Image (tube, rainbow, N blue to C red; front, side):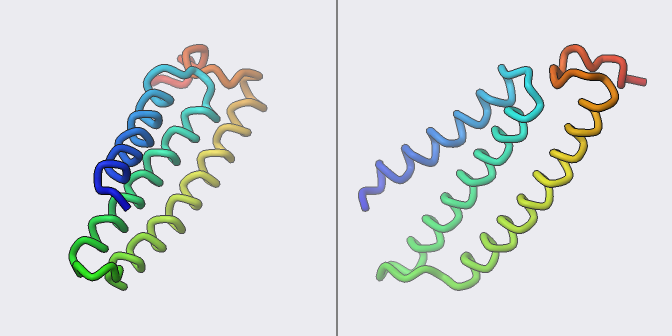
Length: 104
C-alpha cells in the first residue's frame, strides 16, 4: 500500500477523534472520539511495525502490543459507558456542559 495513503488515513482518523473530543457535547460522542483516536494509534503502530521488517512481514511484538491496546481500550470504553449511564440516571442529561455540578 502507498505510504501516503496509510499515513493520511491515520492522520484523518486522529483528527476526527480530536474533533469529536474538542467540539461535541454529548458524552457518548466524546467516548467514540477517544476510541477513534486509539484505533488510529493502533493502525500507526501496526504500520510502523511492518516497516521495521522491510519485507512485508509484521513484527509479532507490534501485533501483541496492539492486541493488548485493543483489550485495554475496550475496558476503558466499558467503564466510560457505565459512567455515562450513571450520570444520565442521576442528572437526566448527557451534555457535558450542563454537568458542571460535578466539579468540586
